Length: 123
Image 1: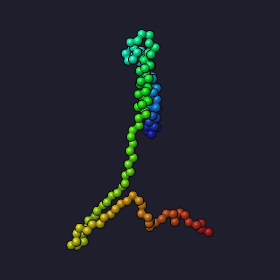
Image 2: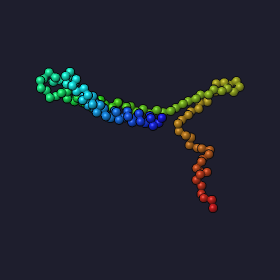
Image 3: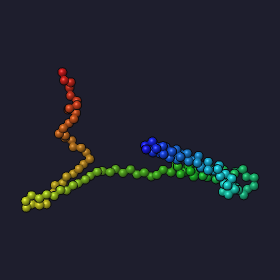
Image 4: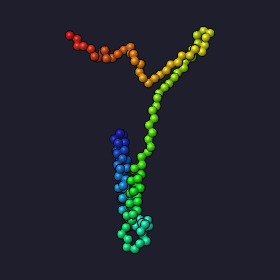
């Protein structure tokens, strides 16, 4: 499944990078139709253009399309969560304790693994 996905992704990237080749191949496949119907100099007798002007336009449009890059905006997201717990003691109700969760770990640990791993050799 992963190999199939990698193959499809590689083919998609290859087809995108060879877009000028696709435009050129489409031009040569339909050259007679383009020369008769779409060429700018189709009304000029003995013209040597034969649709090259249309090919150059399409290649220029394709190159401009590839040059345009999307406008990316980077945003920083800060994680902050606040949980409010209510509990009551006898008559007094409504005490609130605020617990805050931050993405940073606590600076003091009760158990440190490095003391179990890194120690002087036993003689």
